[in-house]
Length: 162
Image (cartoon, rainbow, N blue to C red; front, side, top):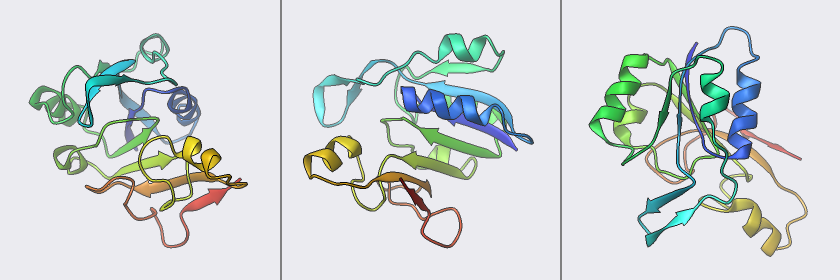
């Protein structure tokens, strides 16, 4: 498997570190983001409170790295991803919608910190705490054009509760 990893949080970096230890997976590239970035619902932008700089970790392992500097649909970014020729894309700890033009390059799965469909979107753990949840988990799902709305990768529940 030729994997492109997309993430920018502490959770994402831990996931990437785990993936690098799996047999049969060649990580062909990593896309990460900035600590502060523009987003559609806030003209002043937002700050990723769980941000982690992936670049030193990735470049020390000689993995191609790119920092998102514009939109996810930027033609130069899409071309970079195509040139990596991933056979699978994994997204963890990411705050941007993955556009169809990237989803069409390779099957794309996301890790989301809730038992979907509950708490899709931003800050799922915060909302679980606000609502007094006593149980949560992480969902692995195939990404589609919605917000955390794709199906599990195989039939079944697709989640693992803690």
